[in-house]
Length: 234
Image 1 (spheres, rainbow, N blue to C red):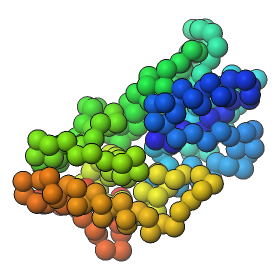
Image 2 (image 1 turned 90 degrees about the horizontal axis):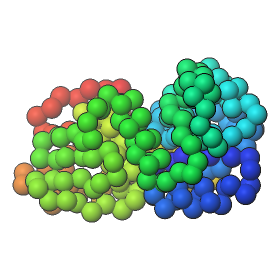
Image 3 (image 1 turned 90 degrees about the vertical axis):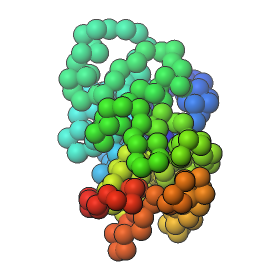
């Protein structure tokens, strides 16, 4: 998961980054300019799984309004210094998905964000079952035919995006945006094909049926599905 962090107090950034990274969250710190000129990439297909964490600032309500009025549907979590029921109510009504109070634990932030994301994609439960495959949305590796498949961090990110959109065709560009977002160090998009190939081999070798579970829909993208399910294009 990638998370954009807006925190103006430099003394808070080091500890915040350390705690969130310990939970496996990729971070990118953003400035005020992000709300003026940096929102475009968030509207690309696939970017919806990248969350935004807003620290205390004088115009936090304005930033939430800017995000939502621009059409941003990404999870928006507000980090407050103190509890205030009235402020929390106002922020949630403005469009924030969650409000949490310092000090935080990275694992809790990750779980809260995953909950928001999976519900955005129509999943109420912690997992989705596709044939012999069980895909989890909480960071656990998938289980195929009763065996857990160990995935690298990037493999899991690609797999999770396909699982969130199971039985739907997802373009390679959308997967790329979900994984790398607006990261400065962006590889060639061919890297997605490499991860797909690795995932197919792992899934096929573990499944009793030998099914790869990730189909290529030529000219459109990839789809996670069992053999008998029809294709739904999004």
